[in-house]
Amino acid sequence: MTDQFIVSIDVGTTSMAVCIGEVREDGGMKIVGAGRAPSDGIRKGVVVDIEEAAAAVREAAGEAERMAGARIEGVCAGIASPHIRCFNSRGVIPVEPTGREVTRRDIDRVTATARDITLPADREILHAIPQDYMVDRQTGIADPAGMSAARLGAELHIVTGLRQPVEHFTKVIEKAGYELINVVFDPLAAAEAVLREAEREAGCLLVDIGGGVTSFALFHGGCARASGVIPAGGQNITGDLAIGLRVPTATAEALKLERGVALASMAPAEEEIELPPEAGSGMTVRTQIVAAIVEPRCEEIFDMVKEAVATDPHFASMGGGVVLTGGGSRLAGMEGVAGQVFDLPVRRGVPLGFGGLAELVEDERWSTAAGLLRYEAERVADDRRAAGGFERFTWMLSGIRKIAGLF
Image 1: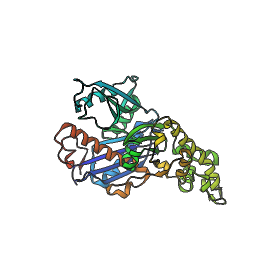
Image 2: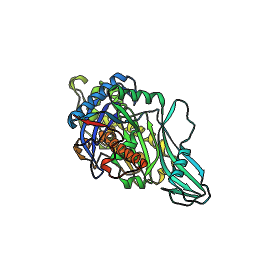
Image 3: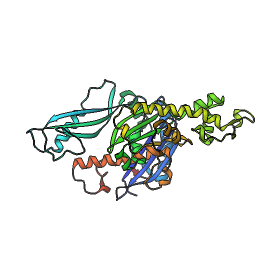
Image 4: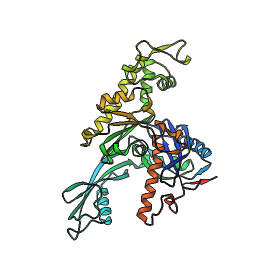
């Protein structure tokens, strides 16, 4: 094992997930450690108790450290919370003298112009992702370098967050004893683990259903076109079951995970489920009743996502359909409900293409944590290319930042 590690933390409402990845010589990612722990101190993606959340991070990270035989020092972390706001921004600059070739410096200038937006004092930019460039009147250009132009334009996808919740998020990681190197919006990270390149190009909608919130990102032409957060997730489904069946929340959660069905048409007509003793001695419930409670909430979640992206011009031309991931997507019948709402092909996405202990993360619950490894590896590689002297991918972390050390 070398010191070429990247460590990721998915800070969720119901669980914390930590992955340690090692960059291979071919540029691939090898899973060398993974840990998971119940989440405390987080409510609907927002930190409500720093100490409790930090303790949960330490528990998950400790498990990953023991498995990898490595000591975690710095991490990249995924965030998804209702305070996240996303939009697109455009900037245009003149190219002087008129008609000369566009250089990398011009691209940097126009990108900075598109990023230079007025935000409320309590909000900050988390991501500014290039989409397309415009050379004079020609649009949809992926890389304008070397083209002759009088005017150069750029379109960016901007992801912003409220400053104070992001600071609290940072304090959780620091309180746990780690350096926070980068914060990444969850669906952008998950996309790195579960989306195929053809889906990104043709257009697809990634929906990440977590415990407290559901985040999403619409891709087209290889990049993010729209994204956001819906303040509803798996806990809402559990709550509906607890109220509808008049059982404790823990019983409702167990029922959802073990026997829950999201699509009423999938539920056997006469099947009954025996509930745990704490729900009442000999108490049973029909599977169809469970589905009748669960399906409307799932429909509502997908309806809210659809409403958020329906106005985007790329939504009408998605050739890659919808990809569901996150722990909430594991409920039987979720693809059927999503297919009815979006009227598009739907599949579930799990992390694929990893080496090492890959079987540990081949589950929808690990999509963000696993995707963060690839996202951060590419970011560091881009930084090194920009700094010059990029020779071999295996050395991309050298001299930039040591993220983990050997025991």
